[in-house]
Image 1 (cartoon, one colour):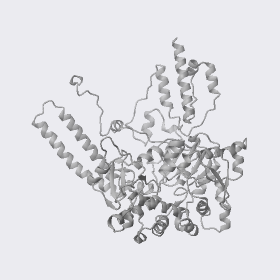
Image 2: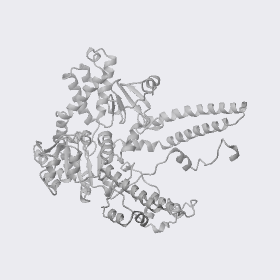
Image 3: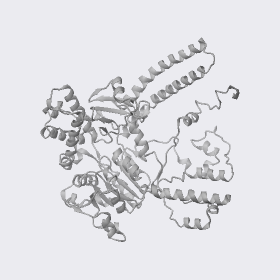
Image 4: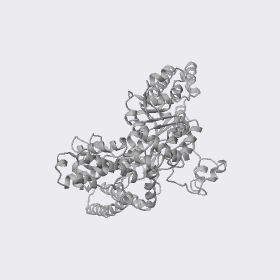
Amino acid sequence: MQSICRMRIASYLLMSTILWSLVAGFPVVRSFTTRNCALLGSSSCLRISETRLLSSSYQVDADEEPEQLLAERTANGEGIELGESESDRSDGRYSSILESVGIDPKELKQFSNLSLKRTVSNNDVFCNRELKMSGIRAIGFDMDYTLAQYKQPAFDQLAFDGSKEKLVHKLGYPEEVLDFEYDHTLWTRGLIIDTQRGNFLKIDRHKYVRVAYHGFDPISSTTRKHLYSRAFNKVVSFSEKHFVNMDTLFQFVDAQLFASLIDLKDKGEHEFLDFKTYEEIYGDIRESVDLCHRDGVIKDEVAQNPEKYIILDPGLLPMLQNYRDAGVKVFLLTNSYWEYTSEAMNYLYHGRQVDEESKKQNAWLDYFDLAIVGSCKPQYMLDPYLNLFRVKPEDGSLLNTDGLYEIEALGPNGAKKFLDQGKTFQGGNWKHLQAMLEIEAGEEILYVGDHLYSDVLRSKRTLGWRSAFIMPELEEEMRVFNDNVPLLSRISALRKLRDELGELADTIQQDPEEDELVKQQLSEIEEDDVVIKQKLTHLAEYWHSAFHPIWGAMFNAGYQDSRFAFYVENYACVYTSKATNLGLSSTSRSFRTHGEMLPHDKLIYDQQDTTFKEHDPWNQSSE
């Protein structure tokens, strides 16, 4: 009877795992021991072994193996032993660790070639979620601020000046708008625009507003808390329609125009603006900026003088070629339309301005298996009913396609036959893309982009694609962080000191006799805390101002991670400062995280400053 129960339970768990894996789009783990077969029966094992083993971009060094082995050892009643630790030895950066776990460093063939210190570079690729590149069958790139990096503020100025003209001459805004000046240094990525109130906010990962401005004017702490603190039965989610996330560098133009118009509305005397809400003003700005990207204000100038606006990257073509040589399919997926995409990509390919005849050849397309323009992200990743059009590269004209139906109608190798007719498209949706790539599992696609919502969050959360986030600002953030590590060490130490003083107060209060000495000690702890807090406030202000004089560190809000950092950590599998940094890594590279710890583990791990004790303060007899 027990053996039957075990067989039924094992069979149920296995079938549940396979079913869930298929539903979730994950590859089924197909590793079974003799014990598994004994429980399931030989016929079950035979059927399972016939299922094709899939490579997964998540399987880095089979990281689930230690826990799986532990489960099997426990089921078999086996124990696990480690060799004696020799952690007091220090004849190499990893030598003592290797020897403590029974590995002779001399057995590792390349160990001696490691440097005494690991070099952290602004060109590194940083990992939030383990990524096995050998499990990636296709890699896609956004264009703007990903493959094509732009020179600020010159590129932004085109949209800023064009939008001012449209606001005044088409939408009737006051002539003073033409005198607005653009300053991109006032802004940082990760802010939230409250279009309803005309406010700019920086919030932490817990949705607490740390810094707030109304236009260009700072909002007092009292007003900020009144507007955005949690009220009874209501928590501000910042996902409401009137909150806009500044997820991309393009939005610096929107922010500067909005703040300038808020200032003009509040402080000037303009009847036109008096009758407009902040939300309506922001809507007009969006309309004007979008029009600049469509009507030639930006494209025509960039086409004439690309060297003024686009940064050439010598690593671009070698990176794309490396992926193609490794058998990885490469695609372009951008919201820019064909005319502008062709101009920008031709300049990046040739490295200079070329004649019209050379542009029409679009030789850069040889580095891509397919290119999709005018994709309308994030809807591209959400709406399976968007139509796909074929683009004729020679003149940019569009042709209708029947999308998936056409690919299926072409029979065997339908995707290849479909792409043989032309590999440049406009619009469509993710289903068309995966059909053309002949890829079903989202985890076999890595998408590289600069927009935290449209490129990273949507592709990851909705489709299960692997994601690489591009942040040009990361290089400067890393430089400033490195320069201020001693300051951060002092801040961290003082925060730990405050925490220990608080714990000391708790211990003192456990004294059943609250005499005058206890009260005096508690009072002195409070006084000590005030002294330390005042110094901390000063040091933290200095720390944040080193990054940005208004908004502080992009990845921090107060002492917490900023909301921007929270989304980067949770949705970007990897992130780096520019797309070609990926080309510095092998196409079979496995990116690994450095481990994660909750606060209790961090405290115990820091054994230089902490000691672990098991006791029950409510039961004195246990001491």
